[in-house]
Length: 158
Image (cartoon, rainbow, N blue to C red; front, side, top):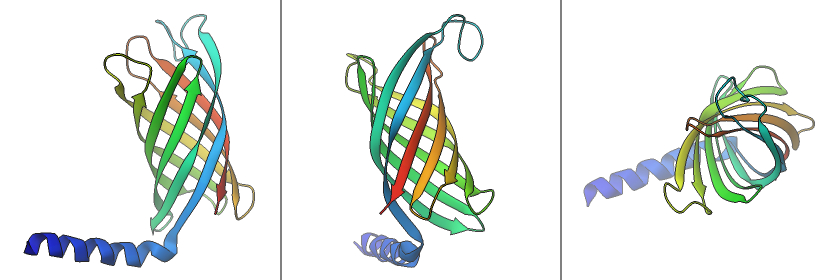
C-alpha cells in the first residue's frame, strides 16, 4: 500500500511540475498511402490511396528544446480504419521548426487477425502562428506487404 501511495505522490508531483509546460490540441489532415511490393521505399509502381486523419495531441516540454508528444489519431485509408498512437520525441531546431521521431502503435478495426501493428514515424512541423502548426509525417511499415504513408496536416493548440 505504501508503494502505491508513493507512486501516486510522484505522479501528482511530476504532473504539477509540467502542467505549465504542456500544450493540448487537435490535429487533422490528409494522407497518401503507398503500398510497396518489393523494390524501394515506395515499391515498383506502387498502389496509392488517399485518406484522412483527425485526433488530439499533448506536447510536454522536457528540457533544452526537447519534448514528448503523444498523439491519438483516427485514420481512414481506403477500406481500412484504425487508431494510431505515435509517441514522438520532439526537438526544437528553431523557434518555429521542429523534428519529431518515434514509434507508432496502430490498432486496425478491419483486420480479422493481427490487428495490432508497430511502425516508425518521422515528422517535420512548422509553427505558422502561436496556435497553428503545419506538419509533414512519414510512417514506415515493416511488414512484407506494408503501406508507407505520407501525412500532411494542421494542428491547433487549445
